[in-house]
Structure formats: structure tokens, C-alpha cells
Image: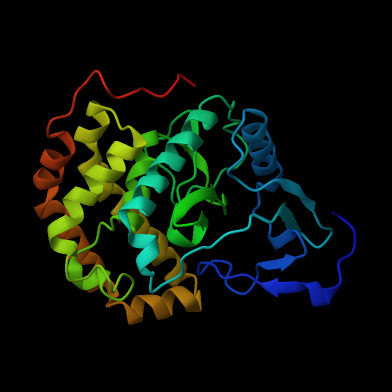
Length: 289
């Protein structure tokens, strides 16, 4: 699997803005730019697999030119504008369940906090468990309309499970006002304002979020939005053209102001939906790290 591969047996894979055009499938391998902490990240992925979590890429190695090699995971990923199948309730439930599986496995993996984990989307409060932090549609592999694997762990860092749920909710509910949601989620735009609370509850239920974490989640979602805004601001300031273009196309900083105002105005509505009828005995806590 690590030998030379015929260039004819290769193709560019779709993905997000950070590595756009730089991720290539060659046979049964994926080659992509390696993050600075690639060795620690590969050790983490190997530990997950040893603990029975088979829904992440298998690390194969790092080329001399600095590109990492991972096993290819067959399936579909959603790219914007996101299709109907990616926004179904079945898809949302499966994302919540997959994230829970990741966290249960990750809680058993000892984290080297000195390994240089990515900090840009990390939980500001930190934590002892490694979170994915970027469970956006392009980073989730689907088969038959259900999430089966997570890819692109470049933003993984220690944090709280509820932080990872909040970041995931931002993409999959989505936690956006209807005007901001429309370009990326055109099939949800008309109903989004009325069903965001229901979809947030569905994600929390499918994950198995505890009552305490449910009560915290609306504020953590707002905190996550602020971190994402700062992430975009850094990318724009550094001169990344894709981020600057996306910012212009999606309404500039006014869009971010609108998102944060929308989240704040609906905080208690979200909290009420998350806690309604919750049986405190029915929610499983994560195992201690």
C-alpha cells in the first residue's frame, strides 16, 4: 500500500477551504498536507483503532515531501450547497451517534498535552479528552444516508465533550439565522427558523448529552460561534484568498453579527427544548478519561 502508485489512478477529492485542491486519492490511499503534529495525530488515530473505533482513517505514514498518507474510506461527503440527504433527520441522528462513539473511544486514549495540538478551534476551557472540533459536512463520510466515519482530524485538541457537540451543532442544525443559512443550506432555509430547536434536541438525544451539558449547550454554542469568527478573522488577516472570498460572498462581518445576535435571542428557547421531559436517569455519562 505504501509503494508507488500510477498517477492515472489518482483523483482530487472534494473538501473544505483549508486544503482545497490539495487532497488526492491514489488507489486506496489519501494523500494530503500533513499538520505540524502529524506524528501525535497518527498515534491517536492508531490508539482509537486499538480501542475498537473503526470510523476514522487508518494512518499509513508521512512522505518525504511532508504529505501524510491515510487509508481511503469509501462513501459520500456533502459539500455546499448541502444536499437534502445530508440534512435529513436520519443523517443528523447518525452524526450524533458517531460523535458519541468517537468520544467514548477517545476518553480511553491518553492525551499528550505537549504534542502541539491545534488551538484555533479548540475549547477555550481545555480538557483531558481529545475532541475533533471540526465535524462539518465535508468531514463526515456517509453511506446510504448515514454517517459512518469522521475524517480530517487536523483541528483535534483537548476539550470538553459538550464543546465538540456545540461545534457539530453549528454545522448540522445549523446554528445560523435563516438569512445566513440560505446560501449553504438552501433546502432548509424556509423551515430553519421554526425547527432549529427541534434539530438541536435531536442531536443532543442521539448523542446522549447529559442534563447538565444540555443546560450548558446554548451558551457553549455561542462561545463556539465566537471562536469560529476569530478563526475566520485570522485567516483573512493572513491573506488566505478562499476565506476572504467566502467572507465577502456570505455577507461580511455583518453576517457574524447577525448570527451571534440570533443565537443570543434564542438561548432560552434552545435550553427549554433541550431539557423538556429529560429523564436524568436515562442519559449515560461518558467514561472517565
